[in-house]
Image 1 (cartoon, helix red, strand yellow):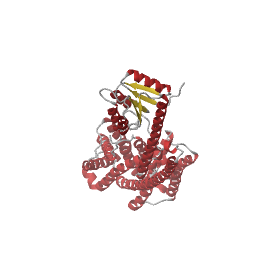
Image 2 (cartoon, helix red, strand yellow; image 1 turned 135 degrees about the horizontal axis):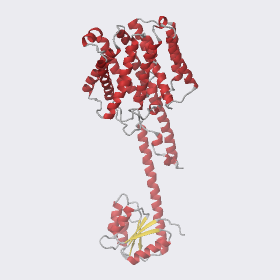
Image 3 (tube, helix red, strand yellow; image 1 turned 60 degrees about the vertical axis):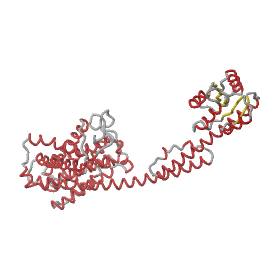
Image 4 (cartoon, helix red, strand yellow; image 1 turned 135 degrees about the vertical axis):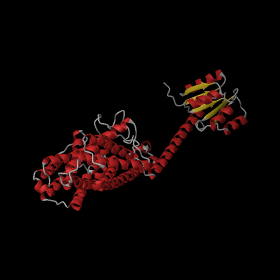
Length: 516
């Protein structure tokens, strides 16, 4: 079977001439398609790919010169070689055809050998031109890629230069060198971004820890007078909601009103607002602020335990020892008794542990909220308002409402400070979790413990006993063993998820952004 060397379009209005020309081309081993007019020729060229055109000049309606002019005026067709074949033997016609862009000229009384030579030369020019155009396109792609690299927002794997790099000529060598250099620039950029993110994340953790570190001491000051935890939580959550609503009006960032985000706000308001505040105030009347600050750092352990239980973190012997040290920290607080730790009974340790447990659940759920156009401020407002809405009927139903005169006269400054810190910390917490991940954000326990101890000494004149020092040492050692490496925590944001049944779980048909 003769090997097909090229696709040829034969154009002639005379059927006999058209068939004769098509047969001669086929005998030379080419694939041929024939049409009977200039309009059909242009339509065929725009519909299919052809390597060369054999064009008759004398045709009705649209002669060969007009067809040739149309082909050369079209950027998509101008590089297709055209050999004019005509019964006209006037030299002026040949000159005109060449001037219009024809690659060659033959009379209809052509010699088959001459036809073969002209076709071969035309196809060779076409192939050479195709290679030249492809080369120029690849040069343009390489130049465009250099512009992307200059913008410093690129991934070498997505530059699409692999086919150019496979060339064995100078352009291929240039592409390989360029990809190698681009990879080095990309790695340096990623390393710099990781360092910036680490510094940024560290600052957020310090700020979050310092903010929350003051709350145990303020809670202790309020609860030493024997106020009811539900009444105190009602005022702090209500004031937080009022502050967030006012800020939303000023900034124009509002929570979404659809049912799915409302359900999320209610869930997070209960888990991250109502329950931890009630447990915190309840424990604060019986546990020193310094001890509460140490216990709050258990949030880091609990986040890791939940992540490991859900298969999101790989268990290891080192981390098992870290968790053991965390339990030893709690034991060193519970065992000695009130004379050494200020804790009247182990039940209050469990109440205090419920606070970081609630915060850990909140971390996991927030981290698992699907990505999108998340309005972090709007989500924080929705969560805070939801917590206040849940707290209000519970407080009135149980008869634990604290009158405004009593609240403002005796504890207004403390209530307002806790409310402001809680509102600020909620916004900061959501932002930190969404940008660094739940596991990394939970490490705010370090700063929280340090801040809590410092505030307890400054505001309450509490002292560090030997047992408390031992518990703190176990806590820090355990956290060092449990916490993932920095490269693991960077990816924690993408791996933490919650079971499909929880509001905010990723992957469900209702999944939207936290602010939606």
